[in-house]
Image 1 (tube, rainbow, N blue to C red):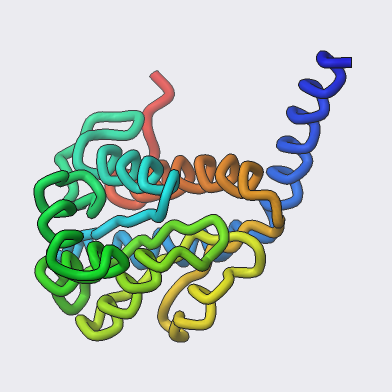
Image 2 (cartoon, rainbow, N blue to C red; image 1 turned 180 degrees about the vertical axis):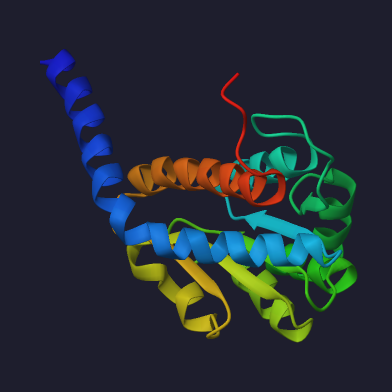
Length: 198
């Protein structure tokens, strides 16, 4: 019984990834275009995620600043959920929902990209960051699910919504993980070209 349930988890995850491949390939390619355009113009990528998506945001920033699967110079990226002192100071003096928005106002510049990760599309801290990015004339790349929630309604025609076609949050996060890998791989491909097989 337990083994069957475990196997079912694998099957459901695999099925969603297979279904998502066709649906998400165009928005992921558009997101890569926004990231590469920003980076090559000397801009930076700000990344935020609400709740458990904060870890995904940190992973993307680490893969851009450090490396993904091959060596390259570091790329300008900042995860907005990593500086405990900044988060504590902002939360103490204002509504907690503004902690990412305050950082976007302070760090963001026109031409920068905000990557906003929210499985439901309704995280208040992420929505605040998107609103701040609007003010700063930044492009937003959203990773969402469940139809995009309130976040999808805040996006403009120049923004990108990579919306996983599912309602279950754990499945959405699994696909978000794969989307992050696709973004990093494609950014490296665009900046460095094909990797030698040797």
